[in-house]
Image 1 (cartoon, helix red, strand yellow):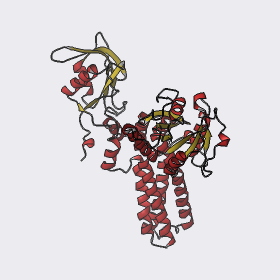
Image 2: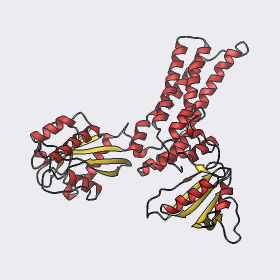
Image 3: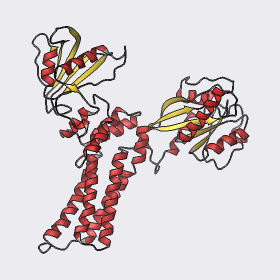
Image 4: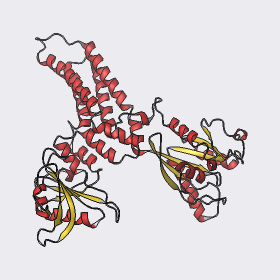
Length: 460
C-alpha cells in the first residue's frame, strides 16, 4: 500500500505559506481523533472560554512540560463531521514568519500527531465522502490558479458542475446495462429489447462525452498558461515590447546591440489566460562568448514556446537576418510584430505573405499592445470560444478516462452491428461505466489516488 494511504492516526501540518519576516498569520492544522486532546494539552485559554465546535478561542501556546510560552494565538475548533476532513480538526492561528508556526507544529508532533503527507487533508475529505475526486482536483487547481478565469473554472469544479454531468452519464449507462442484463436473465418474461433505442441512447451519451472532451485543451491552457517568446534581431524593440506589455522595466533597454544576454521572463494575463512572456537575446552571429550563449538560449526558447512573436524594425524593413530567423521559427505558431511604426510606415515593409497574422506596434508610445493581445487570443481560440468564457474544464486525467469511456461505447455499437449475443454488449458497457466512475472516484485505484494527491502541497 502506498505511503499516502496511511491515513490512520492524527495528522498535522503548516497550512499557510511561510516566508521569513513576511506574513502576519501562520496556521497549523491538525486532523484526527487526537486533535482536540492535543489542543487541550498545549493551548491555554484564559477565563471561562467554552471549548465547543466552531468557536474561536484566544490564548497562549505553551510547552506542556516546561510551561515555556511559545506564542500568543487563536484556536479554531471544528468537530466531526462539520470539518474539512469530516474528522475533528483544530487550527492554531499563530503569528507569521518561521519560528512560531514551526515550534507549534513540533509541539503537535511531540504530543501525538504525525506530519501529514502532501494532500492528505484533502485525501481524507475524499475518503470520508465530503468531496468527490473532481472536487478534490479542483481544490488543487484553485490553489494553483494563475488567472481569475482559471480560478472560476476551478470553483465550478469544486461546486460539482463537472461531477454532475459525469454522474448522469454513468447513471444512464447503468440503466442501459440493467435493461440488457434483465433480458439475459429473464428473456422469456420480458418484451424483446428495442435495439434502436439502445443505439440511440449510446450515441447520445457519446455525443455528451465529446462535448466534455472539447474543454480539455482549453482547460490545460487555463492551468498551465501560454508560453510566448519574443524573438528577432538585436535592437528591434523586443525588450521595449516586454516592458510596455508588462508595464514594468523588467528588461534593460539601450541603443547598444546585444544588451539582452539571457532570457527575461514576465507573467501576464491575456483574456483570462496566463501568459509567460520570454524576452530573448537578439539573434545574430557574434564572437562574444556570453552573447553567444544568450543567442543559443533564444533559439531554444523559440523552439519550446507555444507562440513566437517575430519582431522586426519598420525603419530597417525585412532584412536577410530577419529571413534567417524566420526560417528557424516558421514551423511554430507565429505572429509578425512590425515595431517602430512611429518612425516608418509599416506598409513599406515587404515580408513573406505566407505570414497570416501581422501586428503593427510603436511600443515606446504604447501603441499596438491591445492589437497584439487580440492576435494572441485568436491563436488560442477553439471553435470561436475563448478559454475566458468557459464554465468548466477537464484535466488530462479526466480526459483520458472520458476517451476510454467513449471508446468502450463505440465498441458496444460495433458489437451490436455485428449482431453478437447480449453478453458481449455488457463487456464494453461495463468498461464505459468503470471509466466514468474513475473521474468522480466511484471506481478508482490506489495508484490513481497516489498520483493525484502527491501533487498537492503539505497542509492541503
